[in-house]
Length: 186
Image (cartoon, rainbow, N blue to C red; front, side, top):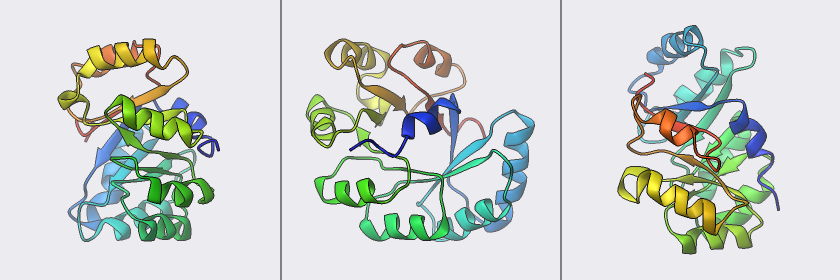
């Protein structure tokens, strides 16, 4: 099963800001700042108690052409809540057979995280062709992605983890990288 058009979503956004909000009040000014920079998406991580409130606030702004994603998805309950609040895409730091069905049936574009060839193959067996390469800085950076491009020529990646303003263009220059994620944008 395809990943509910995740390539279409990622293809619109070369860089995806990854944000862990400390308060709901920070959401609106952060999104305004991103739009001023020409960035029209955000991945809000589920790393803080107020994360779902922040995601709901971002969606409620109803900003034209702005995609709100949910990150650090690790449970079926989080996927269900993402469906209920209407997120535009989901990001998981890893790959898990237990969550595969929930992702596949969610109707929401999603990108599971991988770091190793075995994880890529596990995802390919689900029919997936696009993955978050995470954490890129700990698992081989550009060298690993170049190798994966040769071994898995039909697979596309969105690397995150250690990507910076100085390095993101090098990643985007790889033919198997569709976009990059990072916290340097905020």
